[in-house]
Length: 312
Image 1: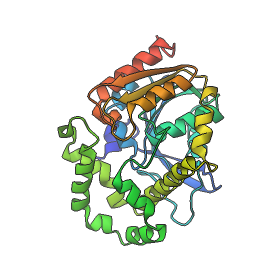
Image 2: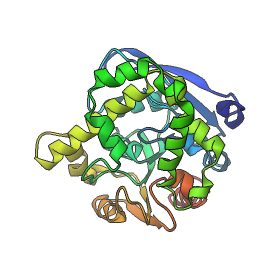
Image 3: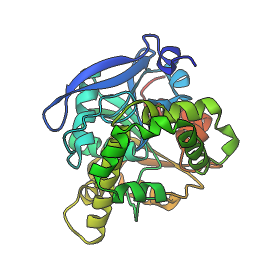
Image 4: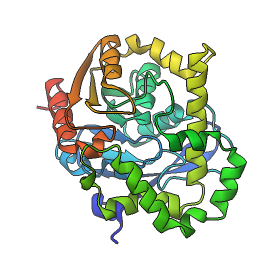
């Protein structure tokens, strides 16, 4: 099967070294296509740049599109020996964006990536000129999927042992079948998901040791954040929620009408709290909007950026 990076980006997969939130050098995988205003695509938990596969070419007609895999995801480095701190994605995303462009960027971000993007817009207002978030878990009640909850409950030492034994690689056909079933549940039209899609979605889990550990760790951080939010303990979610009013850049909120993970009413509430927010509900769309409603998403992004003066 052809290398996805090579077929999607003129220079294929490129690598960038940044200092992570713990002060260590870490290698980040990214690809870029197009020229002009930089537009970054941020993925969600358990995903990688491949989730934006249907947006890269259409958006690169107008912008310099940059996809990167967050630390621990996709083809980026997965440091096994050290634990992550809450909010490390915010610090590391800021460093990646600054390393790859020298002007305010458009940031398009889905799910957990959208939460990171909202925090970026709060803490680094000079970094983002326009913001687009899709189905963002800004008002979560729980982890939305049983598999996420299960991974968040298993001690990381056990997950690391399983990962180091390469069980995901040994059981790759079974893992792909399970992943296909689960992914189809967040698509309005499950038949969209092809065998090639399933192959690439699961590729980091089957081929790169450390992927499962890092995803489990992120889910444990998320579960802890939600728990602390509910009992009024100090947490980053509350900080982001309480500072939404400080985000001044024009922001487009895209939300799947049938998102069963985070209801569209969360998008309405988010829009009310943003000074320059605009909400668009996506019909015939569940949680995976970047794939399941890619044409509507791409059109909405281009129209929003045209309307707000990014290009003519």
